[in-house]
Image (tube, rainbow over all chains, first blue to last red):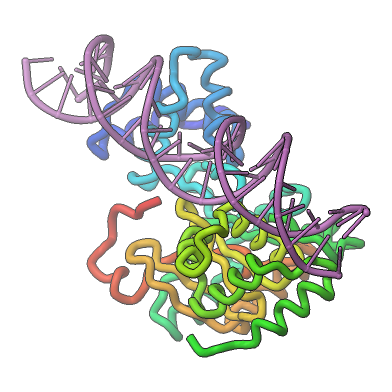
Length: 149
Length: 149
DNA sequence: TTCGATGCAAATAGTTTGCATTCTA
DNA sequence: TAGAATGCAAACTATTTGCATCGAA
């Protein structure tokens, strides 16, 4: 939404041993401008408007690189494409499997469950990796049958 | 593992208005025999051993039908294929994103979080739809960097 | 005897990869 | 100027679909 420190991200890239290219700059600018979790395709389309030469494959490769460096993260929605967002974003995404609405829920709602799983199984739950699916307020009313996907 | 009431599942199918075919019988028998969450491919391979004529597409269509009827459910592991299992199984799967180990955790561990999400957002969380990713006891030791997928 | 189910092949969606070329550090 | 990053096309994986045929109810 608002202009953000692209330079900080680029510096982090460089610090991590990666190279700062114009394609990566454009991709990060778009990611910041869009401001919300986006599919690789939507991100690529946005980048394309200014830089038609930047290929989809580069977007994927850049997102992978950024993921490995911990700068961006992605969640899977099941059948659809993954959603990418800046890793600084600590909220959990509740996604309605019916209408697609995305709700940002604070991490803290799940901290107890995460703790219990750790205690019981020694398993470190990472809820940021996947979307948390379910039904939003509107969709759970009057729709008992026929769960998709 | 052990022999199970295939007939009960077939009866449920019939009761739901679906037809009982030899392909569906074979698929359900395999699903019961395998006894654990399986990919469509692995299930199809198992079915193939006895019934080489049953096509992959039929396995997918049958799984979809069974899902719609609530008899089976599936979880997504991210990049890989979905895992299908009998819906009667109420446990949640913790999947190590590093070594792939699958841990069955009781639903109850998450009931509080589910409740809180409901209270706060009116959102009905369905944790059975996705695998819960993280790191198992072994893998979280000595591996701080480089989270895959 | 009528639709639902199937087999087959082909299409599709999303993502990855090989390779020659380009550009950053 | 070495090696990382890119563009492009092609491969790939998981899944879906169109269509003619078959078979359960």
